Amino acid sequence: MAASTPPRAGTRPASAATLAQLAELNQRLAWKPAARLQVEGLSIGYSTLRGRFHAVEDISFEVPAGTNLGLVGESGCGKSTVIKALMGLQPANTSVSGRALLDGQDILGLDDRGLRDIRWNSISLITQSAMNSLDPVYTIGDQIAEAIRAHERVSRATAWARAEEMFALVGLPAGRLYEFPHMFSGGMRQRAVIAMALALNAGMLLADEPTTALDPIMQSQIMTRIRGIHAHMRRSMILVTHDIAVVAETCENTVVMYAGKMAESGPTADVLERPLHPYTMGLQNAFPRLPVPGAPRQPLISIPGVVPNLLLPPPGCRFASRCPFATDLCRTTAPPVVRHGAQVATCHHTDRSEEFRAAAARPETWRNMRGAA
Ligand SMILES: Nc1ncnc2c1ncn2[C@@H]1O[C@H](COP(=O)(O)OP(=O)(O)O)[C@@H](O)[C@H]1O
Ligand code: SF4
Ligand SMILES: [Mg+2]
Image (tube, rainbow, N blue to C red):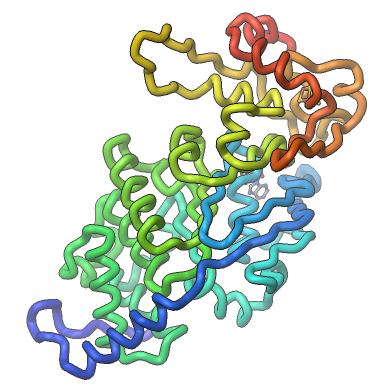
């Protein structure tokens, strides 16, 4: 990257030519439509010294243009693996199959040039560790400006002016564009990465646990900002998070993953209010609800047991060792994907979901599972 740092903000006002070019650029970017993403039969394998395994197996979902999709599940269930594959950032020991159509173009298996064309421009990423997205040897302003100039024929001064606007949008002073990533606090770095992800108004935003590394106050500030920006710009977004409450507030649709497979997906209201899959029922119990005045406090119930070893996945349902409703069929035969209206679940017994939901709300249902895993 060529250093392109113009004089410090405030030391020289932007020229009339820069302001005119910035207005043109902003208008062009504002016209960019939100993107639609269709993921079909996505499977992702890792080769390791201990053998090859599928971290993600046969996942399908759609993000309609202008909507948010929540991707939830315990640590290790394959969420970041999906996100990295969509950005073409998977490590060398990875094999990817299936399709991911971004506005009709399959973005899996693009070569370096194809990836350069879409990154930041059509699809951009906010990771849980902002440091990974930023280059330590360039100022943040250089990095944002160069990302803009890689896709738009504008002068350095115009790219920097756009970067200043993005900093204002995420609540950072323009003067800090001249600083290096290590000079920022964690929360400021996270905001700088959001500014970079928004700089070209990409139609699809991937946010992989964007607040996990931050303290709770900063987490809520950043999420509020992401939600506000989304509402303002109407981009499409995949939001990876552990936090069901954030999904409930932010996402129209939700995909619940368990041990590399899709447990359940559908409109968020349906998935959270009438889950079909016992794992979703357990996941819901593990999160504090907002207290309802006058109502008894809901006890927190964690799901006993651990995710199975993906090098040796069980023959039947991957959740069977932790599922209070598992039957012999569940332990021997992989469950089918069953559709109920707009909701989809991978479970043998979705027809008993009402009975399961009532039982899953009782702590003893899960307590009796202890030791079974
Ligand atoms: N580069 C890699 N090589 C081998 N295994 C990996 C690699 N990256 C992740 N994994 C494994 O793949 C599984 C899914 O990981 P990940 O996608 O990071 O899960 P999540 O984001 O849901 O926590 C885990 O078992 C993890 O250890
Ligand atoms: S298939 Fe069986 S074990 Fe798996 S989630 Fe459904 S009921 Fe539980
Ligand atoms: Mg992850």
